[in-house]
Length: 236
Length: 322
Image (tube, rainbow over all chains, first blue to last red; front, side):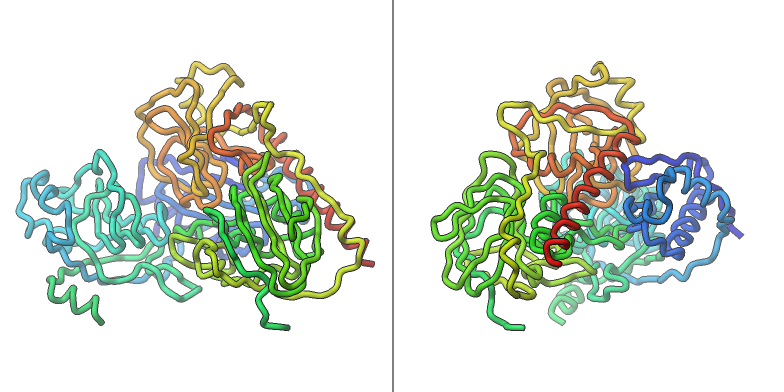
């Protein structure tokens, strides 16, 4: 069973935005705590909560103050949250998470930075691909762009810094790395991560229940496809 | 309900688009809230027509838009002081007017303010994506075909019926628009990285002056401080909200606006109070702003006052319908 601890700090950073922060150096405890608090708040369906947004060390809650006051009059909203969460007895529950297998073409024509990554890491390009496909990643947070998933677990030899100057446009589907994370650009955008491949899959769906392919807690593996397979995918 | 379009866009401005109060409930997936920049003016435009305050409106930004009316209805406007001409005759911002088939409606940018909201009786018919009609031009979803309005576009009102004459007498002026002759003040409250900023900055409490640059857009306003303070603090990305002031390594600021990403990775030193977001939305690029710290209790009080004012207006309009 995973341990769940309460946040170390509550900040009311805007009239309608509460930020909770966990400072423990035990990354596993912080992760299980944030996920448990996130799911608990989502499950309550409070009418004054508009959004609950997890990240690696903080959890944000977007609220509607007028709706809150219509129920609680002049209650201090930060005190309300502190007391509510103190009493709530939030425990860890295993959440149903999806496992994805994502095809990636690592051909240099679609992977602007793969040669540079191999050079910095002092390995062959083929080994970069093998390493990237060798592990299962976990989505630790979503952000930056719609459907952009920060996936943790990149093997240590591939840890490289971001580009010192971000690119003006990174194509949609680009698979990139920075630090200990990997991610896929869902839409064309400026970006500073190093591009090592591209997937033909869309990161957005037409399903209004889950409009993005990934969500926090999902597990992801990559599999290498060649240019021929890439072209087949694109012309399906 | 008829299927006759209400207007045809003859000429569009640089960034005219359909917005409502935003797309909430999906920020944990990285989907930005979007929505109108000046929620107060957008609500007023709707309320004047006895619409629900959150119906889709058209946001015009420094726009010379020209529309042809295709069928009879009522239109109202609120926000920037734009010159509005209906068949050449000036119409007041903050008022309802009737339009007839073949009328021509012409907008010319304002002496004060940046954004004008145009509501139609029943609200503009639009594509709703994830519960909101707001246009997301990154994803091409919502609003009118997920993009800015263009010449040739046909837009339709949800409903049209006769209004009592008294409606045309209602008038509301947004009193928070920036003035040319006076420096605009924007108030803010401290955020998690305030301490980092205050330790390193030699600004005394309230003498921060900064220019909103021309790089500013619906995602964020770039603020060039009179005396920028460079830093090298490294942050982990974390959830963020509209009005958040991020401190860039070069010492200047970004203030996040409606289309902001859901997470941010720069030190978050303060947040523009929600009651001042409408004023910030009405600032034109190039303007000098004075930034003033207040506390959260003051911010809450100002926000509740502002929302209560809208409720009073809404109540008055309902009463005139009885």
